[in-house]
Image 1 (tube, chains in turn orange, brown):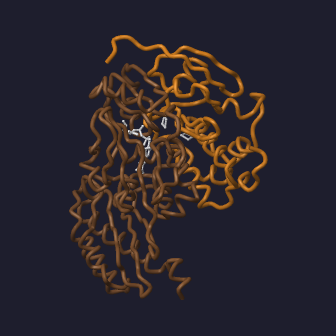
Image 2 (image 1 turned 120 degrees about the horizontal axis):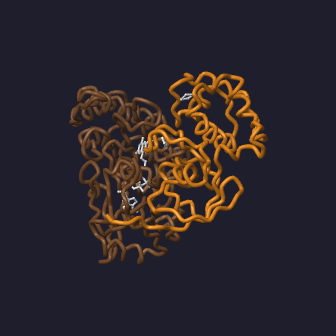
Image 3 (image 1 turned 60 degrees about the horizontal axis):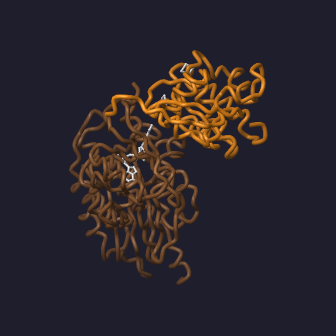
Length: 163
Length: 295
Ligand SMILES: Cc1cc2nc3c(=O)[nH]c(=O)nc-3n(C[C@H](O)[C@H](O)[C@H](O)COP(=O)(O)OP(=O)(O)OC[C@H]3O[C@@H](n4cnc5c(N)ncnc54)[C@H](O)[C@@H]3O)c2cc1C
Ligand code: FES
Ligand code: FES
């Protein structure tokens, strides 16, 4: 193992803002977003890909930010929960439905679920419960029991335009 | 936890990647999709001094049509395979198996070849590629070689890859006319590794007699397990109820799984039988398109 950290350049666009930063090669994208850019809406739970709390959208695809190195996002376009709306006070129809259907309790899992479901809805409509549960199955929530999330997803899932 | 320190390499050519691997053989790890390696780095189960990120290598991200079938290069993501009508059309069991591999968020990064190189005994794709008689193209500073899937998997997390070798891709031959494929697995939860899985293909002549057959189980041995006794039962037979029952019994008998906290050995053996029957029932019910044109 090298006895010093190796600094590497990252040039990446996060929520529409370009960042050129020097980071340690071993910094994960999740830690870069949280620690360097202070975008702490992305949460870190298990650090091995299982819980989904760290899910962000990279070049259009939902991915685990705990399983990517920050340096691998060089040249990439990253979206986090903070970027879902332009104004921090606004909610997307999906966020609004999460709120109304009690799909949020402690909130630790919420940003990951929002990024996974936002990416899924961009790919196509979600129209029945089995499909909704399939979309939700890549993230873990310890509080809600998922029922509210299924309802929220089905409420906004039929239309593709607003996401 | 967080990864230990490493020197990061992002080679722009296969030769450059091989040079780095050769120079640091034993202390270097190839990073593809990272969906198996980065968890190991985060927990410091793996602490390589050098990480060779192959994601910037050119020309390895798209499936390539060959004279005999398809070549799937190292950087084709699992999600790209499942979305490729050409690949899932040529090899329908590949699409079915991929739907059972983790979740879209993992498959968006994870590569087909990375799953083969990682060689988890419960992984779906090594069994599927074995059932398709895949051939792995491997490069090293000494040149290129090709290894059959049947010889590639050595044990759980162990393959024929040497420390300084790079898996370039996998070759899958088109299936002969009259062939049908299927895949079934049983897992504790959606997206989990399989407690047991069976991948299969069978070729039938115009009278419905099986002339060629592959049945491969995952999760019940250190490597994908070819169910040869079950295949032998089917060769020369029609896929009727008695043939299916005999093959199901043979498959359960030849699997010798070990039990663990997730399932006992006996439960897994029964699963192999059940999943074999489901695979064969799918194949029996399907009329291969070539036969339709004969009718
Ligand atoms: C939450 C979660 C659930 C999962 N569930 C499943 C599941 O149900 N079934 C399943 O099969 N898998 C599952 N996986 C694993 C997933 O399929 C991985 O993507 C895959 O095993 C590895 O592919 P990768 O491209 O990510 O490889 P990496 O993680 O980058 O590499 C894995 C290993 O292979 C080596 N390697 C990779 N590519 C090459 C190459 N071209 N040449 C030489 N060596 C190479 C690496 O050095 C490393 O040792 C899961 C993963 C996660 C995080
Ligand atoms: S922190 Fe990344 S999946 Fe759990
Ligand atoms: S709201 Fe608490 S984990 Fe989901």
